[in-house]
Image 1: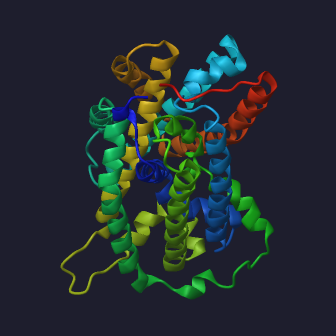
Image 2 (image 1 turned 30 degrees about the vertical axis):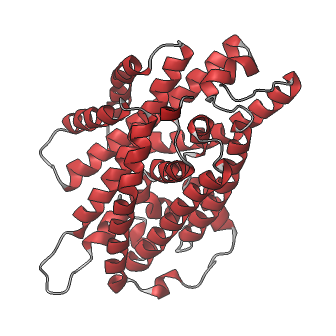
Length: 365
């Protein structure tokens, strides 16, 4: 990698955080309470985040075996030509699914709460067009964008949560572990969707400055997201109750609707929530499109820019494939389990094959 393609540890931390917090945050409290059947869903969210921190630590350690190379570049040398290409196609296919899913959920939420008369297909196309503009700039443009928007999104989240405290009833979270540990354990896999992102370190590490601390950066990015997920879930459940949260499609939006500002001169706080959420969705989408395009460019050893446009029809097809929002969420849950599986199995296979074949790499000059 040359100097202009390198990103700092701070940028990696913020990129992982922004990439992680996509569509799932608005429906996370519903998924958590449905799985646990009670108000302890926030514990499942917290435990799932801690487990993902362990996974991303392992993924980063494996990536450090291959300095300045992405998985797409060393997969064929580790697994052989055909298996390596196949795994690379599976990996970039996952990012295509991620991009398509994020754009579809974005369109559903905007259509439901803001632009009710605008066709969803138009919203998807506009979202993809704006995302492509950033992706063409490469990883440095994406990383700088994350540096710029993260303080804004965190501030907006903090404002909404502070205003929502007036509706919080702490008794809605008591008693802790009301039905024991098993419901909490059952809920861990049900909240997997918002935590898909650990696998991105198989690509991010290739762009990091080697004097930085990759494992600390990656774990910190997951940690920030975990704290935010847990607090948002706790506030939503305590404001709406677990029983009501289970019945709502996007309970975080409904929680924001209940906010009333003193004097009544500002209403519809769910629109403020929608602003920060779209910024998160935008980052998740752009990185997903970039990773898929990068995979194709490195597989065919060609320039990146043409593939940024090549993947657009595929992403659009994935986005419009689910007939309704319930089918889209079902696709998202399957994609989340697939992503977690990739984050666990792929580094393990890489490590085993590298040890068997005694593969060693030195940084490129």
